[in-house]
Length: 202
Image (cartoon, rainbow, N blue to C red; front, side):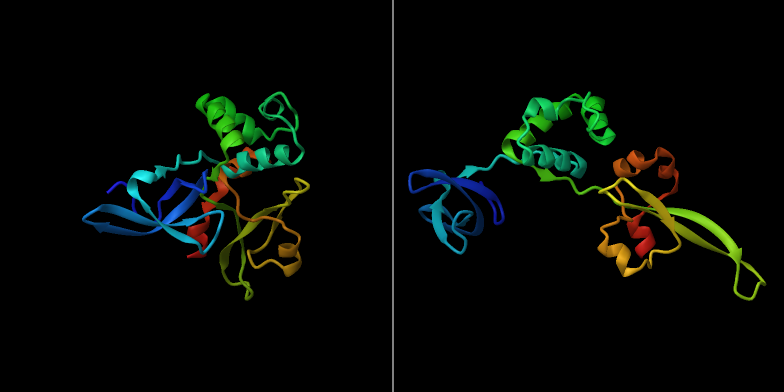
């Protein structure tokens, strides 16, 4: 069996190349057929013989910060050459590092620009700064943490006492969870205080 349920495929529909997802597989004495839903017409299914399906080439997978850079440049209708210019002072350090540290990433970037992309699910971290203080009775020392926040729109960052921050902070769009690259863009020294989100939220 060449394909399975959930695979994305290409096929000819009304004399043009279309894409869709396999929902069901049926084997018979005449061969294997696949129930496919077209991307162009949701809730429209068709049965297609295996020989008439083409595997869909997987999209390149890139980090979120690279996807943001591509999205921004496409939104302003800039070209690929200017988007890849590592001398551009507006290019985030995380993007230029990603392009320079591995030359294969330059080809990956170009493919993502031309063909589209999927965003890599990167681990997220809180930045915990340990603090120590007397308890309310003044009889013992207890530990706690302060946390880093950042405003992606302005680049402003600061520290607050707890993850239970006010609703106004949430509405502002300020972030408390960061990828490794985002943290290092703010300050590489913060990486020493990074803790995986899962460990804090368990």
